[in-house]
Image 1 (spheres, rainbow, N blue to C red):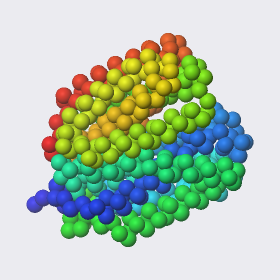
Image 2 (cartoon, rainbow, N blue to C red):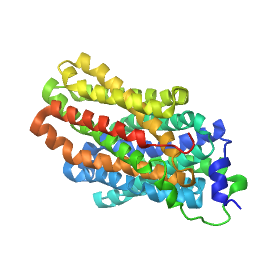
Image 3 (cartoon, one colour):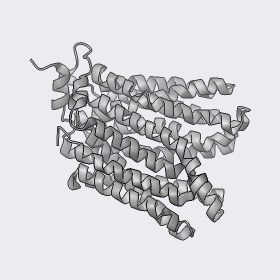
Length: 395
């Protein structure tokens, strides 16, 4: 007899547009809360009476939370994806409530940790839910649409919320707004999103860890860690580099942030529209090859703002396309432990970002952008060799 969780992993192929919309909208508030801390940091230093170095602990909390993603993946594989998404949204609602009410930095940090945990739980469960209900030949479309929430969370969430901060001179309205959005998402998932239907588990099932030893799983995880490390090496030092070389203003840096959102949205939609036609593995290889090329030429384009903007726009598009296309690839490696595999992928990207945060600034200060970009591009080229060992079971 085939176990229930095996049936659910292989036969749920009935994803509807409405279900995709609910899962995607459910992530918007989480993404907005996750990304707003970057522009909000200077304001919070005054409101919570701490220095910028101390407020940077909020970023550390985010990185630490991403390392908890395997917990969300294991929960999705053993308790169900929908149940895990509900738990994540309840955690998010509690976290944003406490952020809105927190009078001190310590209390705010603890509350924001709950927001980070909610993001770490929701993403792998949502990706597993969509993957289990979509054939591999259409998975690029489903996960590409889902990943538009990353860009939309910044464009439709962070930007308006920062105007709200400027108008009220307080951060609490931001988190009351996010709380309301989180409650709406929770209601949508709870009431309108179907679970496993006929394949619902009668009892908790253990994670099939042996499934993670097949299909080049380790190679795929190393690929994700290396590519995110390389990309973040450039992202971490770009503001300081541009200020030093072109004396750019805060307004110009804001333009670059908006350009990133446009590029991310274009990249995600590109996967949705073209990824399945081109082939997921081929898409990943091509776009990360272009990512390495864009990073390599950044120092050459850095002499003029007019050259730098199109270079950055192409970098944002191809990188986002590449990383989004990686998720369908990861989802097909170990179908019997899909949520756990996707969660390890998220944790791998977090590990890569942590490494980048430790080496990027010292490398740039010591050797400049030429060396930094060159090392980053070389890391991506090395990572591409790992794709030769990745063998999706559902391909």
